[in-house]
Length: 506
Ligand SMILES: C[S@@+](CC[C@H](N)C(=O)[O-])C[C@H]1O[C@@H](n2cnc3c(N)ncnc32)[C@H](O)[C@@H]1O
Image 1 (tube, rainbow, N blue to C red):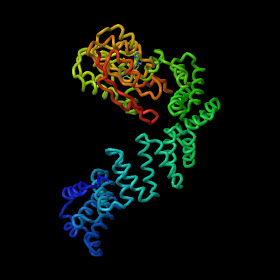
Image 2 (image 1 turned 45 degrees about the vertical axis):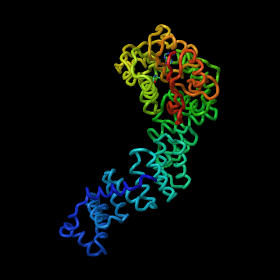
Image 3 (image 1 turned 90 degrees about the vertical axis):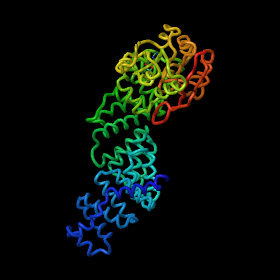
Image 4 (image 1 turned 60 degrees about the vertical axis):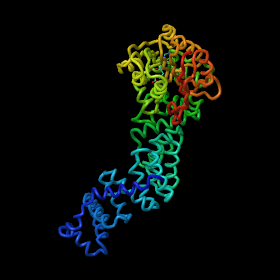
């Protein structure tokens, strides 16, 4: 691997020059009886310094341990175990950057020491790219497959980076080897839950509870996992009746449990369970437009448009947490990327429309392209969030096609990030955009890619559309100036593929 290159040596030399103290040995010879004693018994000053350093480290005097290892290294810079010792001492003092330098140097000198790879992995985990820590954990395991801490560290790294299946495999390995303890079982329960394997998750939590009663987050997840597993095998009434006793002090409302269960079952390929939960929810609130729509979507009923009542209710309830969830958790960057493509084509606009503006995630990027920006959306709560940004000249609560029809030839930029997924058929929308856009104006939009048909409803209730479908509908009014494949966001831990379009009005 490339990172153990010349720079490992350079960094180590710079560290010795900066941290070392040439007078240490002489001073200790005069002032420190314990060291003098060691010096007399050891074969060499280097060995005496190392032993003294190890003694100091054990007694908690890390500062002095570091001074001893540095003094030894100034005499014997090629002794690999001294770099390892120094790395450990810096690590104990939380001087992580220096510990990394020392561990790297030790690995550059001897790349066959599993414990040093593990130490290095733990040090760089959370610093910089995850691949670096992953590589180091894997090297440690290749050298010593039984290194439980490396399997555990790698499992947690995969959990943090949303690679839940791999996390479950690594943590499961520890169980298979018979090395698991409560924390491994809890982590495995979490990984299996997040990978939507609820029976396995409940089982892992149950094993953890043999060590100590579950509480807090673990108890909450265990009760959910057991309940969801029971719903999947077909017994929703019994599962929901059993839930309160399982959750104990961590009980959540059945509304919350079934709402989350419905989303998970839809997203992770348990359509029968999703339908059962959807029907259960609708039997309690038959007028709920969100549930009505989603039940049809998940049951695969033919749908070619999204009802406005669903969009409005859904986004009103989602508005407050939208930015954190979409950008923070799901990695959504379409507003930035699409605005970047637009800016690459043309840098100034005089009348810009952010269609389906939501909370205004595109505002800061669009504001760089022109002075006048207006936003339109069906959801009052999303608009309220957008208003807080203070970037829009006007924000209007209106259905997109209705708004466009009221503004013929008004815009030189119509920007629609993640809006078309809330339209099935696109013919009316495209025609309305064409009417509202001046000649030479730009229409920018993202779509989620459909695999088989012009447009298809997904279990999430959103629509995917085919590139060729959008191209055919827009052809009479627009020419395509850019068309770029992209990842829209993560869904159920998987990258959702889409396309960004920039079109010019003929
Ligand atoms: C996924 S959000 C995207 C928001 C914003 N464009 C962004 O990229 O962050 C979709 C938005 O489109 C709005 N929307 C969906 N269908 C609409 C329609 N027919 N008319 C107006 N707004 C609509 C929703 O209310 C929601 O705010």
